[in-house]
Image 1 (cartoon, rainbow, N blue to C red):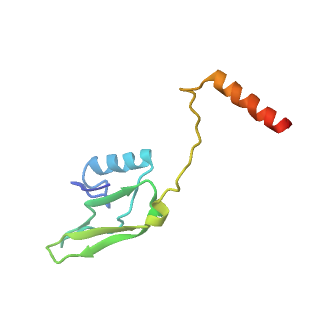
Image 2: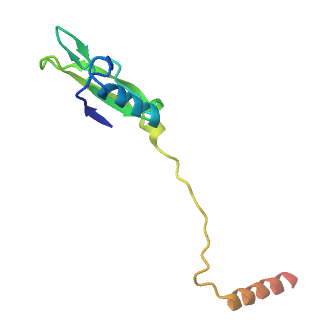
Image 3: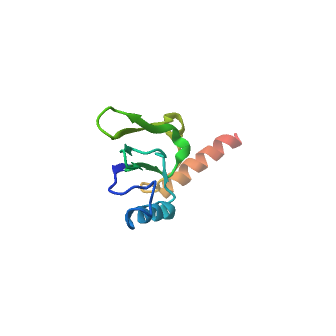
Length: 118
């Protein structure tokens, strides 16, 4: 998931409790922020206002920021390994007895047994 924050997660104690609450939520749900670099660089301060959160960081090949040339904001990106994300198909055998006919089953079973005997 990705969104722009109104708080700086690089300096969580500088901007009230929003940053620390976000970091607490990430800790509770096991989320890691893939963006470790500042996403807004001004003459006064470097801040990280954007996050990409994941609960499986191993699916990520690379993530970071790029200079766009539009003011002091940086572009964020993440490249995921789709091969790891693809789940192997799971086949489940199941039997339904909705239309099960006990007499027909017993008849076919007796016929199979009699064929084996001869």
